[in-house]
Length: 526
Image (cartoon, rainbow, N blue to C red; front, side, top):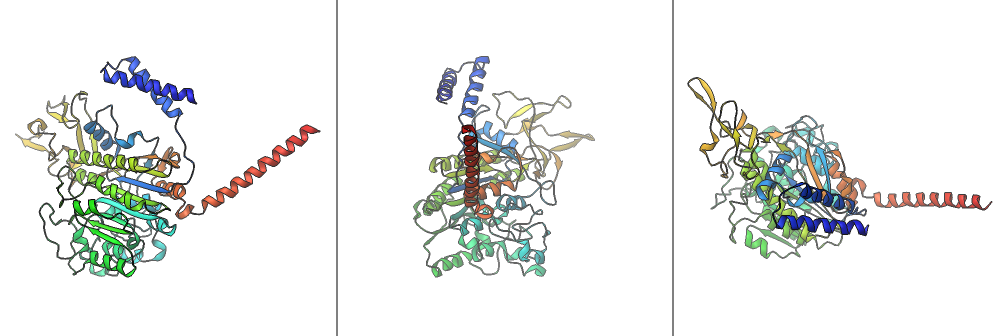
């Protein structure tokens, strides 16, 4: 054991020496790399004990192509994002109960509750079809998940997102709805008014009102009469409450009635100064989605980063001696992809990687399971034969067919800005991307098929894990498997009583082994 560790250190130092001297990547370089990986694998530690805490990161729309391109964009082709060196990696299948290519609310339901459901539904099983309010009200159709399981076990709970806190992914943590777009009352049809909107379910119902830390955007879904602010416009495409509600005030009143300490936050300064001993913290930092990291206002009155929110969430939740379950979503990766701006998606992926690194640094690997995955992929394509010293956002090469250049990153589907075909002299021609700055945040990569926006991909996505029970991720799994790994590792929900039953099983096994040994020993004495 010690010899392999010594070898691993020597190989690492040799690789470091080569990189410092900028030596050529000859066969000896790759031999050292291979040996280093082997010795690292030989020294992997399995932590086979319950996990006190679990942090689940969701990169919304972060398919493998996005991760690869983000790595090159941020580091280099030979570098790694923070989670790419996690010791255990597996693949998960993202299809819905009714669709091959999923949306975020249905995949989030699978991840958080362990049950696949229909497209655009949240927190209900597959018996509930899109827009079927009556079916969603049936108790047998409603499913519980991580937040409820953790709260019933005495653990603290929280979620952080860069989207609206009522958006598709977070809604699956606490809501039961036949339509993910019913974020506030104004989007629910008259014939479905019996159904409570997602925002009210968060503030008024269990497990939503018992979630200790909630951070993200979505003020316009929680309060009526919200107006544009500098750098924070009302999202005209999203739900906008008009019923006179003030659910943020209602959230505060609920905590007062229950004699719970609490804080409400609206900007960077308030987040930085928050008393982390508060039992409940609600941070609503934007009218709609939060600003992307490259464009956000970093002043005291501006919006926090995903890393800032992650840091405070961990500090607040960590006060519970029984542990916590925390879900963190990099939701704007998906937002950027839908609009066909690849650089924005890559930049947001790097921001997620930064938040993961912060979580690794602030937690104990012996008692905290950290999982990083995605809900679904996108139609982003990484192609061409560009040189290694070329930006992943740059031109790959010219097409041998029409002699027009194309970029390394393309989309399979895209909106009008991505669909860059022209008709010249009755001939269809593709726009030359070298006429634009393809590395700009606003540049729209070219797409093959014109749609209203870039659509999701149906490919599998990866899951990266470290900490207690992370070795349970080991091959190709259903997306629902993530919820059961968390349940088993943290001993909540379906596996809440598994610890005692496993102990009894081990006890019986030990007794059986002892009896066999005893009998064998007696036989040898005859």
